[in-house]
Length: 351
Image: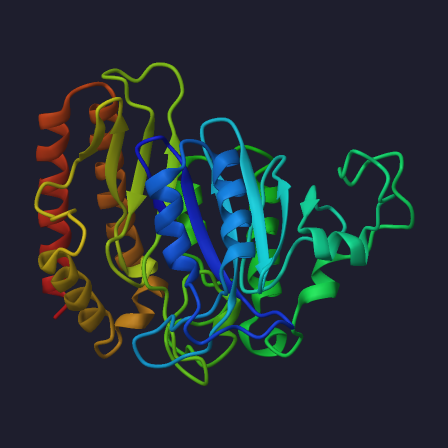
């Protein structure tokens, strides 16, 4: 997942189709990086992903320690539009997002696709071959639309990965806000467990957004990112604000801010090395993961005192980000640094 200098944000999820993934195929994360390197808006990213999906086998090794190969679902946005792109082997479907959307480890596009690859279009949305327009709404189309999801998905992962449950939880959370979603309520969704007890991750944990390791699918949330597009009022040409953890377990972490301006990215946490492949950043990730896995730590997000302290420091960082949006970059950096020092001291005090 990431954000580029043009304001294109993208994330991907593993999905499992009836088309076998290729062991030495292309990873979805490879295509995420390629989109961020080459696409100037979200619509171009959609075309890039569709072309790449048809041209190259998907698969590869998506884990350091084995793990299944898979196809990919993507969610993409820029300043004015957003899309969901889903793939199955060398096939694809996409739709534009109106309002809000969520993706997870399950296909989500049904009959609401806007475009399909040519082979799938002939199978589930046949068109008159003499018609010049291949749009799915073409008056020359014959037959009835069928579901993209039902035509491509492999059904076995449902019971294990709980992708539908996780997606429904997020959609319900978004709907409950009735369009009034502020920065911190959104971060709270990314930290949420959807009712499972994080101290006992074997029970229903795959239904949560913040996943804790344990059980048959022993994976935790690797990192978390939110992108906030900035409206009128920001100075210095600031266009967007990225909130990133830089570590796993969002419920036990703080989101740190990076500004996106006309001249590129402006990090506000100066103590963190944001360069690609940074050893220091990796050490931070490893250290936090080791801390989070300590005795009793996974349950801290259920402790009212811990949550109050975490949220208070997060609010301080939010105030600092507002100073940055107003052009007071150095003051913002000082305030973020002070807040992060307080946070680290707090974690150290917990043992």
